[in-house]
Image (cartoon, rainbow, N blue to C red):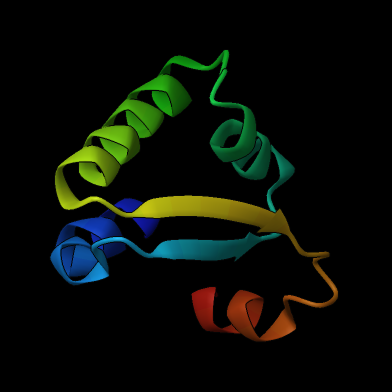
Length: 77
């Protein structure tokens, strides 16, 4: 969903820092450290960084516990 959001709204995010709250620690660490070991995560990160560079925005990630993320979990099911 993050990549889709970046593709749809990235042009309007110029010079903004967007914070993403996520209960998946692997995703948060990949965005923060930019050193994924998984090939799929590498591909996603590459695309995210490309979108950040062409639209001039920045994505940061913050971990949220699964309990605090109930609404999003219910919507996604």
